[in-house]
Image 1 (tube, rainbow, N blue to C red):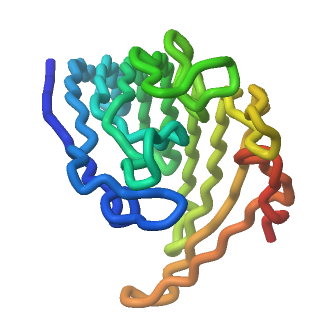
Image 2 (image 1 turned 180 degrees about the horizontal axis):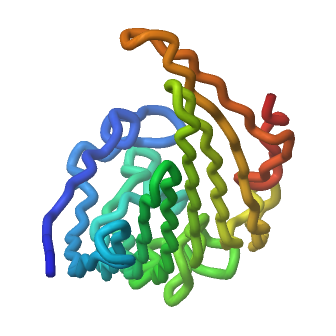
Length: 222
């Protein structure tokens, strides 16, 4: 059994503190804060050749900084500590080594919820009370396999799967709620130890297109 707890702070950016012009900074902003804890268990499996790790985690975010257009006078600040959210999830990790073959798998379930939407309202808002945080998939998985071929040569393969996520299309006003599709990235690579102090490393990523956020697409991977 293992467990941990902690508190983290994220300081405001220089722009959020001291911006001038159309957007006005707020020098009195507090840092965004989060409190987190986790509990987990670890067990060996397949004799002593494998391990399973199960972890439950929980986070709460407070004093999230938000921008507002609704200023009483032009000199009023545009940024305030108003939004809040919670996050919880479960992570399962498996790992094993059998002779010259090793493998691991990780699956994460994540549930987020906005508890204070701050200034924003409506389905197109960045924070909507009771809904999930943007661009946080409920499911995420990673798989890794490596094989030792002797004579200093290793080959490996990786597969990463990211589930669908809620987002906003900010090209329109108000922003339109959208759903980003799930995607997978598969890569293979190898390592050749030419002599003890030098290695040759190669990696190949299959040609694909990944849409991280609307409406723009990333370039095709080489």
